[in-house]
Structures are given as structure tokens and as C-alpha cells.
Amino acid sequence: MPINITAFDRSPDGGKGLARDTRVRWALEEVGQPYVVDLVTFAALKQPRHLGRNPFGQIPTYDDGDVTLFESGAIVLRIAERFGHLLPDDATARSRAIMWMFAALNTVEPPIVDVTVAKIFEGDRPWAEERWPLVLARLRPRLDQLTAHLGQSEWLDGAFSAGDLMMVSVLLRARPSGLLAEWPLLDAYVARGEARPAYQRAFAAQLAVNTRPADA
Amino acid sequence: MPINITAFDRSPDGGKGLARDTRVRWALEEVGQPYVVDLVTFAALKQPRHLGRNPFGQIPTYDDGDVTLFESGAIVLRIAERFGHLLPDDATARSRAIMWMFAALNTVEPPIVDVTVAKIFEGDRPWAEERWPLVLARLRPRLDQLTAHLGQSEWLDGAFSAGDLMMVSVLLRARPSGLLAEWPLLDAYVARGEARPAYQRAFAAQLAVNTRPADA
Image (cartoon, rainbow over all chains, first blue to last red):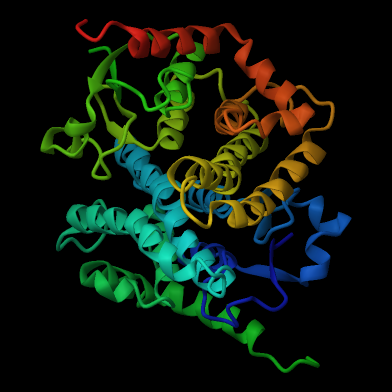
């Protein structure tokens, strides 16, 4: 059976590649594996069929015939371990690449999501303006520190890896607020990720889903 | 050389086991590996020596002589892969255990940290009371969904794994606010984790550090 993933029927971002299925599509494109997509509406996310794939009712999920997984980090790691290309052969370099996946998801993504929450979900609340500097103060050190680590390097630790795939995917979410541009080295790093042919194919595939006519 | 980890010289929690070094100590106790601890003061976290171990200036870090790692998820995974015991032998069960590690760190921990931020860091702000229901509304579904998955099971997916170690560690952080008690099945699940001899040893070790006399 082909690899099956789930994605939003209509992503809240309208196709900017910020939904987490883009990471999985990107990984599958990097390793050259075809896949089919099961589109899930918001209503269907909380229905038994999807909750059987992911008890948290989120996309993406992944099924390769042997295992059904949720969590984009776990899925990208599974793809990397199963099909190669995205992790170094050397065991210690491999551990470091996986470390950068966790750093993206547990250290860098949460304060970026907080920015989205503050801007989108709480942007019209009476505290929005006064609270904004606090939200930014929690994100800023992370992006400063990541910049200091990256410097002029092309990728985080040698060749492009699943760690870069995840870090670029997470940083992309800081672009709509205009923040990413304030860290030019990270902005350029993200642009290098986006320039990869595999990313281009993944982005085009999710965009096609999100911009198709309503009756398609 | 022995395994070396870093931990807070004095943890902000005063020794309740909520700092992320407890997860690493617990994993090392589960696999029966001795380790030495390098205590780091808050001032030293941002000094070049520690930034060389972790560019984000956080604890814990880990060094087994072959590789230096940060991110508690990456460290626990390295320990599990290197010393056994914490991941199933079966490849698909192993992928699912790793999935639960990512679920703990990327889906469950962020809204729990947001509770801490709202209570501790923003508790005296003028918006604290009005904003609290929004913070809780983002956490509640996650704990409801996790409860629905766990049900009456002892662990998340068969035998105790690194996924449980991480999920218990993350849920523990919802206890000081009194929230964890509102989800009795999760509270009991955490208690099962805490009852493990390896956890007890890890907890005692971090407590001894945090309750030693100031001049020790």
C-alpha cells in the first residue's frame, strides 16, 4: 500500500505552508516516496475515524502500512529512519540531527506559536497591546541564540538533515507576523530551505489543495 | 568516562522534580547507568562554557564521551537507544513510543507551560484574571483527549516506555497549579510513574542538590 497522510481539507493559513502536513510532505519529497493524502475537514477532526488515527484530533497523521503515527516530529523521524537521506550515517551526527528536531519542536516552536496566539486569537483583547512586549521577550532570546549558533553556516550541523527540515518549518511560522525578517541570518536560512526542490514540490501540493475551487 | 549531565545549581522549583534534568536522571536510573552532575548557576547558563554545550543556555545537557546533546527529548532518546529498556524491540511499537515522546513535548507540554507563565510570570498583571479562562481552554482539551486515550490502561501503549517517562514528566508540571487533580486518571498515571524505583532515585538525587545548605 502507498503511504497515506492526512491534511486539512482547508488549512487555516489558506495555503502558506504553515500547517504541519507541509513538513511531512517535504520529508517524503526529500526521500522520494510517493504518498496519498486524505483530506480532513475541521468537523471530521473530532470524529471517531480521525481520533482513531490521532487522539488529539490534529493533522498530520501518517500510515505506511506497518504503523499509524501522529506528531510531525515522530513522522519525519520515521520517514528519515525508513528511507534514508535525512539523517547522517554517523551515529553521533545522527543523534545531533535528532536533537535539532527536538530543539525546533520544544524550544523554538512554542514561543513562535505564542506569537500567533497573541496576534490572531487574542489580538482584539484589551490586554493585547500591553502584553505583546512580554510575548516578544520570550521569543527574542531564542532567535538570537539560534542566530549565534548558525552564524554564516548553510545548515545547523553539517549537511541538510531532518533537524533543518523541522527548524525551517518552525521558523516559517514567524514570517506572517513580520518577525522573521528581523533576524536576517535566519530569514536567509529559511529561504535556503524553501529553495530546495523537495520543499517546492511539497509547498505546491499543499497550495493546490488549499486553493482548489470550493466545489472541487 | 562516565556520563556527565548538567542541572541547575538551584532549581526554580526548589526540588519538586519539575526541572528538565529530572527526566534525564530518571532515564539513566531506568537503564542503570551511573552519571555525574555538573551544577550550573543561573549566571553560568549564559556563559561561553555552557553555551558551548547548549546554544540556548538551558539545562539539561548530556555528554557520554561520544556526543554532547541538549534537549531532554533527544537525551532520553539517546539513552534509550544506547542502553535499551526504554523502547520496545518491535519496530512499529518503537515508532509509537517515540511518537508519545513528541506528543508529550510538542502537544501536551506547551499548554502546561502556558499555565505556568500565566500563573507565575503574569499572575500579577492586570489581565491575569480575565485571560485565565483562555489559557485553561487551550489546555483542557489536551488533557481530556489524553484521558480518553489512556482510559484504564497502566501506560500509554503497552509496557512502560520512554514515551511514558516523558509524558509523566510533562504532566507533573500541571500539579503545582492544582490542575492535575482535576483529571483523576492522569493523576493516577503520574503517580504510577512516580512510584517506579528509578523515578524515586532520580527525584531524591535532584532534591538533595536543591535542599543542600547554601554553603555546601
